Amino acid sequence: MRIVLVGPPGAGKGTQAVLLAQHLSIPHISTGDLFRANISKGTELGRQVEEIIRSGGLVPDEVTVAMAADRMAQADAEDGFLLDGFPRNIAQAKALDELLHESGHKIDAVLDLEVPEDEVVKRIAGRRTCRNDSSHVFHVEYKQPSEAGRCDVCGGELYQRDDDREETVRKRLAVYHEETEPIIGYYREQGLVVTIPALAPVPEVTRRALAALPERR
Ligand code: AP5
Ligand code: ZN
Image (cartoon, rainbow, N blue to C red; front, side, top):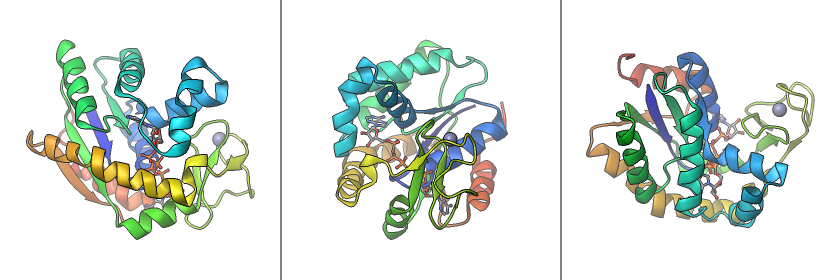
C-alpha cells in the first residue's frame, strides 16, 4: 500500500504516520524527520537545509526529491510506504508520479488530515520533540511524557523545535496554503483523496484513517 499523508503543520501527520505504519507494516517516510536527522548528525545535507528549515521555508525540490527517492528505494518494493510531509508542492507530486511510474507502482490513497487552524497552533505550541529521533513527539497538555522533559520511547531529551516558534509557525502555515494545499486538488482529480476529520483524540483519528483506506492489496 502506498499512502500519502497531507495536512497543515501540526495536524498530527507524524503522530498518525507512526501508528498507521505500524498497523499496516509499511515504512514511515518523513522528509522532515530525515532532514532533522541530517541536521543533528551534522551531514553536508543537514548543513545545506538547516537555515531553510529554521526559517519555515521549503527545501529546494531537487534536494528533497533526491533524498525521498533514495529512501523509497530502500523500502521493500512490494510492501509500499507511508509518505509524511512529501510531496509538498505540485512539482514534487509530479516527480513522485514519475518515480512510481518507473517502478510500475501508483499511490493508493491520499489522506488529508483536516484540523482547524487555531487547533494546529495549539498543537504546535505545546509540542515537545525528542532530540534523538524527531518522530518521538509529545505535548505539554495532550501527550505528556511520564517523566518531565524525557522521551518515553528512548529517554532522550525533549525540546521545542526551532521552527515551532510562533513567527515561524505563521510562515509555515502560509507556505502550506500557498504551496502544499494545491496538491490536494491535484490528487482529487485522480480520485485519491480522503478527508479525515482530525479534531479528535489520537486513537479515534487512527481509526478513521484506517477505515478510509481502500482494501489491502
Ligand atoms: P515537517 O517535519 O514535515 O513539518 P510539518 O509538515 O510542518 O509537520 P509537523 O511535524 O509540524 O506536524 P505534524 O502534522 O507531523 O504533527 P505532529 O504529529 O507532530 O517539515 C519541517 C520542515 O522541513 C518544513 O518546514 C520544510 O522546511 C522542510 N521539509 C520537510 N519536507 C519537505 C518537503 N517535502 N519539501 C520541502 N521542504 C520540506 O503533532 C503535533 C502535536 O500535536 C504533537 O505535540 C502531538 O503530540 C499533538 N497531537 C497530534 N495529534 C493529536 C490529536 N489528535 N489530539 C491532540 N494532540 C495531538
Ligand atoms: Zn526519543
